[in-house]
Each structure stands twice: as C-alpha cells, then as structure tokens.
Length: 124
Image 1 (cartoon, rainbow, N blue to C red):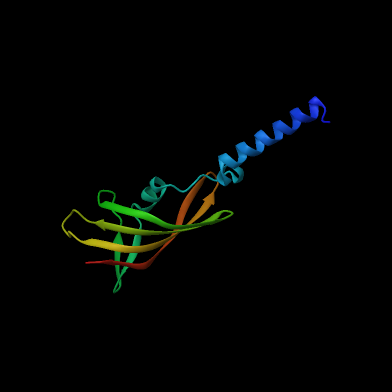
Image 2: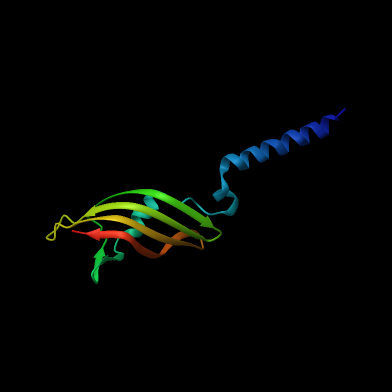
C-alpha cells in the first residue's frame, strides 16, 4: 500500500506531465510557434523570383491570402510551405499565386525568415 506522501508525489508528477503535454513542444524548447501573423510580417519587403528573371516584392499594402500547407521544425530551424495568392493594388495590378518554401531560424528570442524559394510561384 502507498504511503500518503508517495501518492501526493505521484499525483504531482502526473499533473506536471499533463501540463507539459498540454503546453506543447514549443514551450519545452522555448521556441514560439510560427503563426500566420509571423509569416505575414516576415514576408513584407522580401523579394522572390516570379520566373523569367523577374522579382516580386511583397509590399506592405498589397492584399495577401495564404494557407500553411506543411511545417517541419528541427531544433532552431523550421521549414514551412505555404500556398499564397497576392496582388498589387498599385499601378501594376498584377496577381501572383503559387507555393513558397520559407526557411526560418530561431535567433535569440524569435523566428527570423532567412530564405524563401518559389515552388511554383508565378505572376500574371
């Protein structure tokens, strides 16, 4: 039969384990989740090839919609694939869409986008 102090200790450790499971892996590693808001802000003023030697700049004022297709995180590096639709409401009135591969690195206290590649991103 368990002594009361052993039972209390067992319950305490089970509660801690449950809390850690609910908190998620990012809490255990100290890395926050890469949210849609993080992706949105990290794209602003970045350039990506739209094919044929042209570059597309994600302007702050353009309309963008995207969905996160896949996320892989390993330590301090994360790779995210998004399907994106965007258009410039300025003079060009150009629409772009396709898949983009984003690479983030955890630096100090935040995820920072260090590379983005076109995986079928094109403009018309």
